[in-house]
Image (cartoon, rainbow, N blue to C red; front, side, top):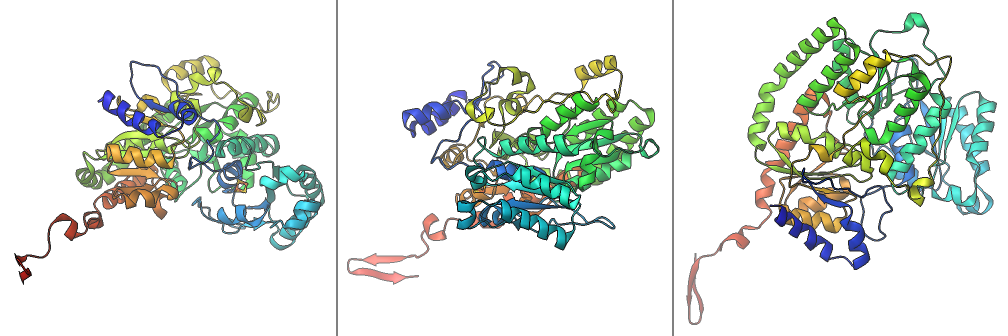
Length: 541
Ligand code: SF4
C-alpha cells in the first residue's frame, strides 16, 4: 500500500521541473507511525502553481477583524479587495438590543490613480469622518491593502488623529496582501493589534463576574456554529464572556481578560492571543474541538475537569446524554448511507483536522488531508515550535512581547494543579493533524490544482472537502465536493446538532442521483439496434 502511495506521489512530482519538484516534495508526507518525518509548511507559494491560498489582508480583515459586528471596517485600497470580501465569509452576527451591526456592509476608500500618485491619507481621513457622521459606530478598523504600504500611506497616524477627534477607538492594521506568504500573516497582524489596543481595556466589576466564565477563541460563527456551541455550553452552566471573533462586539474583546479559561477552536488563527493573555493576565488556554459527537463530548469533559466542580461534572454528563440521545437515530441513518466511503480534506488551517472525527462517525475514512496555510505545529504539534526555522517571509511579521500586568494578573488555578492538568488535558498544547491520521494516508501542504486532479484520479475518493475554487473542478470529475469554508451555505456544523446537519448534507451530496448521469447512455451501451446489409442499414428498431 505504501509503495502504491509512493508511486502516486512520484507520478505527481515527475510532472514538475527539478527545482519545483524539490520544493513540493518537502510539502508532501505519507503517514507512517514508525517514521518521524517533517513536513515543510508556511513557506512562499511557488509562482504560477495555481495555489488555493489568499493574502494577509484576507486573514486579518476577512477572518479575524471582519466578524466584529459593531465596528465599521474600512478597507483602504482600490475597490477589489473590499468587493470580493463583501459577505463572502459566512460569519454570522446578530444585532443586540440598543446596539449596532454593520456585518452586511463593505466599506472602502476606493483608491483611484490620483490617490496612488499623491497619497491616500486624506481620502482615508475623509472616509473615517463620513463613517462617524453616517453610522456613529462604537469603533472603526482600517485594513491596508497592497498599494498602501508601497506608496507609504501612514494609516497609523490617520487612525491616531481620528481616535482623538471622534473619541472612539480607531484601529489600524498594516495587513498589506503581500506580507508573509498567506492568510496566516494577517491572523498574526490582527492578533498583535487586538492584544496591544483592545484586550484588557474594559474590566468587569467583581459583582458581575460569573462562575465558569470562559472565552472561545478562533471561532468565527460560520453558518451559526458559535450559536450552537454556546447553546450547549450555556445549558451546562458556562458563561461565554467573549468569542473571538464570531458574533462579537468590540467591548466583548476588550473585557476578554476577565474570564477563567480560553478555549481554542482554530489554533492557527488565534494561538498568539491565547499565549499573550496567559503571560499578561495569567489565564491558561486549552485546545478544544467542537466538531463531531466524540470530539464535542471529550471537549466538554475536558472543560469540566479543568474547573473540577461536582455540579459541573454532573451537568456535563446529563447534557451529553440528552444531546446524543436526540440525534443518535438520525446519525445512524446517515452512517448507513456513508459507511465505507473515503474522504479528502483540504481546508485553511484547522478544519482539515477537525472534521476527521465526524467523518469517521459516519463511517468515512480520511485518506488525504492538508492545510492551505497551516504551520509545521498545526501538522506535527506544538513540540516542533522551537525547531521551526524562521525565513525572511516570517521575520517580516512583527512578534510583540507582552509582560505580566501586575494589577490584573491572577492565577486561575494553583500552579501545581495546572502542571498536573497539563499531563492530562490539551492545556497550552495542540498535537496537530498528522497524529490523528491513519498510516498510509497522505498529507499535502498548499495543495495546488495539478496535485488535486492527480490525487483524485489516483485515489478516487467519494468526498472532497475544500473551497469554492476547487468545488466545480472536482464535481466535473464526477466526485462530490463539499465546501468546508462556507458549508455550501448550510450549517451550523459544530456541536451535536451541527453533526447531524453535516451528516445529512454529506449523505445527500454523495447520493445525489445526478452522479449516475454524468456518462451519457450512448457511451455505456448502444442505443440503436438494427441489421446492416451490404448496402447499409437494412432495419433500425
Ligand atoms: S493580495 Fe492585495 S490586492 Fe489582492 S486581495 Fe489581498 S490586499 Fe487586496
